[in-house]
Every structure is written in structure tokens, then in C-alpha cells.
Amino acid sequence: MAYSSKVIDHYENPRNVGSLPKDDAHVGTGLVGAPECGDVMKLQVKVNPETGVIDDAKFKTFGCGSAIASSSLATEWLKGKTVEQALAIKNTDIVSELSLPPVKIHCSVLAEDAIKAAIADYRKKQQAAEAPAAAQPMI
Amino acid sequence: MPPTIQACRECGGGAPIDAHFCPQCSKILSLGQHGDYFAFLGLPRRLMLDAADLEQRFRMLSRQFHPDFFYNAAPAERRASLERSSYLNDAYRTLKQPVSRIEYLLQLEGAAARTPQEQSRQVPPALLEEVFALNEELDEIRGQRAAGAAARVLAPRLERARQPIERRRDEHERQLAALSAEWDALLDRAAAPAARRPVLDALRECMLERNYIRNLLAGIERELGD
Image (cartoon, rainbow over all chains, first blue to last red; front, top):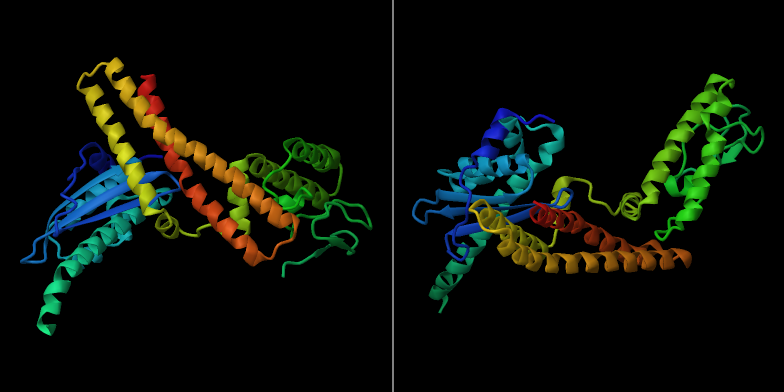
């Protein structure tokens, strides 16, 4: 099976590989896996508290070229987007940008899941941080 | 309810759904509606199959369906012999290996995930954490090798990384065997579907970690082999 030139480019020069401090209140971490191929993907976003915009995104994927390319592309797209805009990214957008063949569509699904998981984690942290403050006027 | 009888193409008589030849006119039956791989081979849906018995059933049916015997037969019979031979080969290949047998059973019993999304959401987070950490450790070792570290320095580290994965694999195999035995026991005493469900769910969850374990061990073998 031939990879598209875009997949090869992301595979050979992956963007934003690495990790962000997991315990930072403004960092959301998503860790997802595809059991049918044994892939595992970690994707993190750092949200600017003032603007609500994603300042930074990092990933680390252990898997095939398409899984690496899908997560690499996802981190590129995430930077500069608001959390809501990020949630609007669909796996089909990744499929068409990278020209993924049908057997590799699950890699893009994994990337979409990773984005959603990272943002869910970020929101959970925010809620946990806001909860005591919101409770204060009640006292 | 799935059908339990089929009609013979030649004489119009009724035959049990998993019969291969018409009990009335003895012609080979067309492969239309039929049961599953287990039923095709005359077996209950047990997971601990006797390999010798399975092979014997395969060989016997294989001879009966063989297209050479239908060389001069009518086109419909020739087609039926080809279809039955081909289905038989698929059935044998699937049931011969314990792992593909389990996967097939999960599909049959409606316990397999239908979409990749569904499947990926079923992986326990603790397993992903563990797999990710082990992958990172392997990645670091690879990095050290690329930086020129000697094999004798890296080998002990690889060995240390391998131990927890091998333990996990052994535990995984034990669990699969225990669950298979449990499934068979339930089947043997005709337990209700609701009673069988938890065993199927446990089997499905157990199967999820299989490829992770395999990939990690393959990664270590590659590093050790270089």
C-alpha cells in the first residue's frame, strides 16, 4: 500500500513531537489506543487561560505511519484554535488532507478521539479548579 | 429465529440447515442459508476444540465436497461443491487457531465491537498507560543505541523492559485459557445467554490487550536482534 506524500512528510518530519507538563492546570492530555493494531497515541493541548486559545499542542504516537501522520497533523491544526473549534475537527478532515486509504481510516478516528480526550481532560481540570471559587458566595 | 431447515435445489425436499447432502435425493446441497463455521463442521460452539477431531472432520468433508468428484455433474452441483469446499476451508482456517476461534465466537455471539471507535473506547486506561510507558522506555533505548551506546550496556535494560511484558503475556494466556474453559462449561450445561454474557465480555476485554503485548515484544526482539 502506498502512502501519500503528505503522510510520508509527516512521518519523516513529525511536527510537535514531545510532551507538555501533565499536571499543569491548563494542559489537557488524551491517551487513546487502537487495539486491533496495538497503536497508542498521546496528544496534549495547552490552553491560554486569558484567550481560551490553544497555544501549544504536542503528541507522541507509537504506531504506523498513518497514525503518526494523523496525530502530527492534528497538533498542527490545533494550535491557534479555540477549544470549541478544536472539537469541530473531524476524522474525515484528516482523511481527506492526508488521502488516507480506507484501511487506515481508523488512524484518523484515533486522532479525533485523542483531541476529544485531551479537551475533556482540560475541561475536567478547569471545572475542578473553578468549583471551590464558585462555591464561595454560597457561604 | 434463524431457519432450521433448507430446501433441496434438486428434489425440493427439506433438509436440516446444516446438512451437506439432501437426505432424500442425496445430491449435494447448495450453500445458501446455513449456520456458522462450528455448525458446518458439526461442532458445538466450544472453545477447547480437539485439534485431531477438527482435522478429521475437515478431511472427511473435504473429500465429500471435492470438486474432482463433481467434474461431470450438472453446473448447479459443481457450483455447490466449490462453494462448500471454499466455505469449509474458511471454517477450518478460522477454527484451527485458538485466537481466531475466540474472535469468531465473539462475532457470532454479538460480543465483538462493531466500529473502530467502539473498540478503541473499550481499552482500559490503565493498560494504555502501561503500554505507553513501556513504549517510551523502548524508544529511549533506541535513542541511546543511535547515540552509540554499546549493546552490552543496552541488553540488560532491554531484558528488564521485557520481564513485565512477558509476565503480562503469560497472565494473558492463562486468562484466555481459563475463560475458554469457563465458556465451555456453561455451554455444556446449556446455561442461559444472560449467564454466558459476562464470560464473553471478559473474553473480549482480554483480547484487547493481545496486539499491544505482541507489538511490545516484537519491538524488544528487534532491538535485541540487531
